[in-house]
Image (cartoon, rainbow, N blue to C red):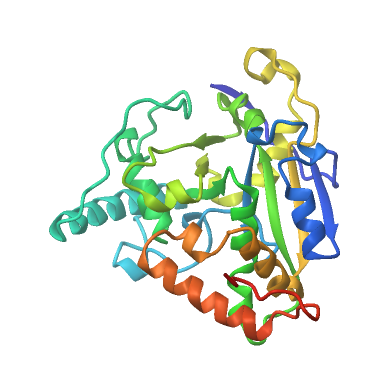
Length: 318
């Protein structure tokens, strides 16, 4: 693994392109896979939606009582934070697998090597590759993991950016965000270590994980001793500062390597309504009975709240 020094914080650069949208329609136009912005290769990008413009950090790397809620240790005597986090994640996966088995539910097994996630290097404390399908299931069920959710489908990301906001009566002002990450650029730098940290894109088998399949899900994994101290967007800025010879096989990528689309949170109802007309609802991203019930609630909410032009059909009308 090629080690490099972490770049200092820099002003906004062409590495990350930001577009502030005025309407929900404008956001969806930008996110269309047919838009020239994606250079006819939309599958080269992965997307993540957030209801707030916060840093791209995995739940296990954020401040919070995530592991304490699960009864896991809050400290290791004399050990740094990264070692504690790795230890907590491993204990959580063991407990999660045990409880799945006690409940008579299948424990995800390692699948065939359908994907080249990364050139694996054993690091003490990190989950082994055999545990990654279980890690993916834990992630989609809301447990704290070092992974960050992304999707191959920009519409799914847009849904996650707006869906929670419509239920908040007094949502604080701000902007929701849809991030796009050029995954081929990350994959070309997986063998690069900046300081003691590196970034990979991970894919788990979809069989046995209905949400992963429905959401066309992938994950980024910011790894190493300083993973909690940075974020994906800051790390990508550091990668962009590396010389071309640091890239795998000398590949060359033109910036930007990330895109950030923002929309005022007040437009959440319009965005949810437009997505529903395209078939992107809770039922499509959360397959199963609970997703259907949530979709019905969304339908009722939109019929009551979403302003429509006179004579326009109701959302979900058959």
